[in-house]
Picture 1: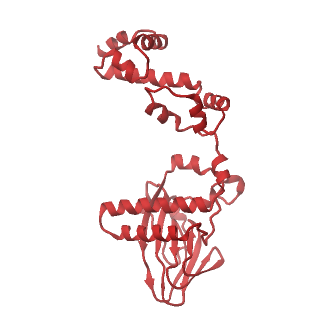
Picture 2: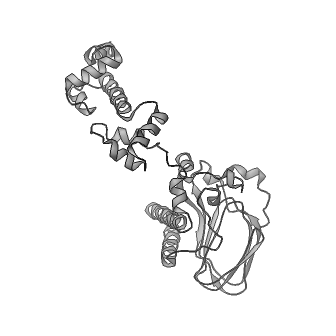
Picture 3: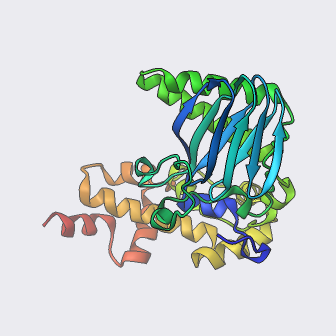
Length: 300
């Protein structure tokens, strides 16, 4: 990804194909004496909490002095080093934020590892490459105690060798990421950067297949006026909402007719038609034959 404003992407759209599913790669409470971690370039995210002492972070040439109680987030591609001059406790986590099929092949980079050309396919997207997000290295939590509690509980759970503990750690990581994005984003920009995304429609219609759907409720869910929703819907799906719903109902009816022994009346009910007559008329208009005849052909 580039740093050009014109190349910024929409987080919501990107997450449809690259789900936000935090994956903790390495995490610990890191109680240490003075230490130095040489320059390296990140493939993933590194979040650090200064529980005790101080930590000097140099990220992409800028020096940050972190004090007790502060949080640091280093994003993928950041060249950085870490240095502490006295005893300290710096709980941390190396994490992926976006799902990647090869996430288990990625790794916290090693000292001096700057050239990641061979591992570019493992590089996580940077949050700051999305519209409406400007997350600083030195985080600015609206409620520091939330970050602290979530991170500490996350690390503790991740270190426990139990499947449910790992699941809890992932859930806590998701909550932590939610707060980070919420505290460092432009809500208006995130909400309006892609206002016409109707990818939720097929699943929503399928789930509510047998119900009467209200166009006003659908428009409200899409954050659009009723008239604008109708226009955007037709542009996206090639049919008005009512016809699109009818098509889904009829497609499901065909599936049930060919694969089940349900009665015609029961299929009409399951597919949201008011009665057999209505169902038969709609089915015949589209398929050119009655539901019963269609079922007979599929059973031959």
